[in-house]
Length: 104
Image 1 (spheres, rainbow, N blue to C red):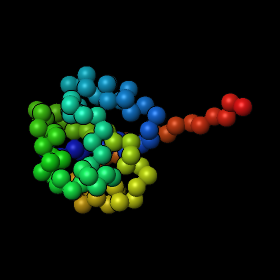
Image 2 (cartoon, rainbow, N blue to C red):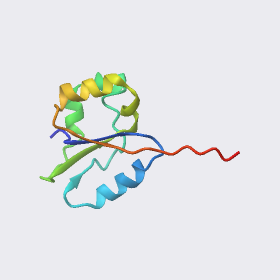
Image 3 (tube, rainbow, N blue to C red):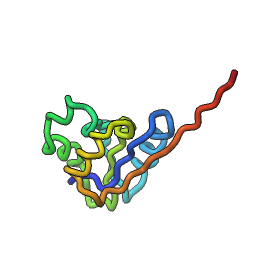
Image 4 (cartoon, rainbow, N blue to C red):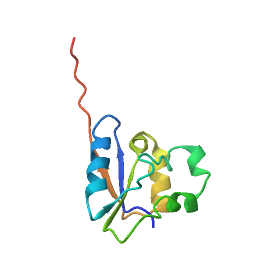
């Protein structure tokens, strides 16, 4: 099973909280052994192939949403192109923003 939802960014903007909430939700599957897959943005994972990536979701048990949480995807154009190639154009994207504040 490939994901139908991908969290793409950004770091330090709530991805860990989302991951923990998703783990508890009965209609959402996220891998329990690794939070950030970084398949589409890191060559070391990309070269392992789609079968490796799909294997990470082996725990899937007919949940409605299958989620890849990888904040690093947001700043790499190749990540989005690879995602479209592997998952297709119907994937849902979650993007959170982080507000940077100057405390000086």
